Length: 194
Image (cartoon, rainbow, N blue to C red; front, side, top):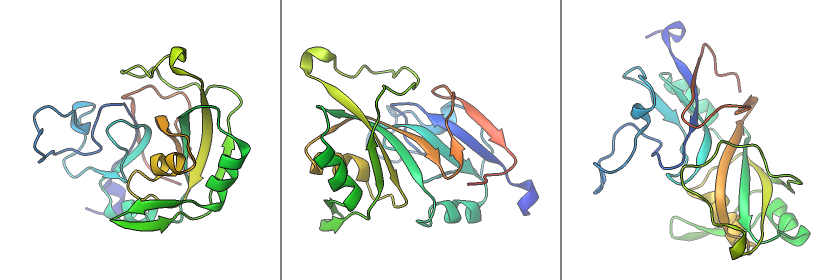
């Protein structure tokens, strides 16, 4: 397959879906997979992952070289994160400087990143499963932009500064944004210019 024959897609991965097409795990018949959302070509692969309980922008391609480039650690990924409690400026500064998290059974210091409080609740699609309500205390929203992507990194980072993640949505990869995409929406594209 030459480069002009490759297919690329932007997907708003909904909450509750695995970022894969095949599930060989123990609960393989109960999990929702990407192939249920759209008729993707057979060779399509997800570029990176979002946890089952995370949502947002996921890129898919039939071109392994594009996948490698985007996962190389040089492309920014921005996340909107709803956290438990009213996040403090001190916690934001710690996130910006890098925090210690567990990764592969070892301690890992995250790279410095861009993080700030969001003044307003972001406009995201309604989630299939409700987040707790205000009776359980206040929540706040932050933006975190990373170039790395360790396993459950954002959730581990917010927990490390005392503000566990309640909702996580990736809103940008490089120059590609979710904009007004709806959960489950797929946009075929000729090029993944990130």
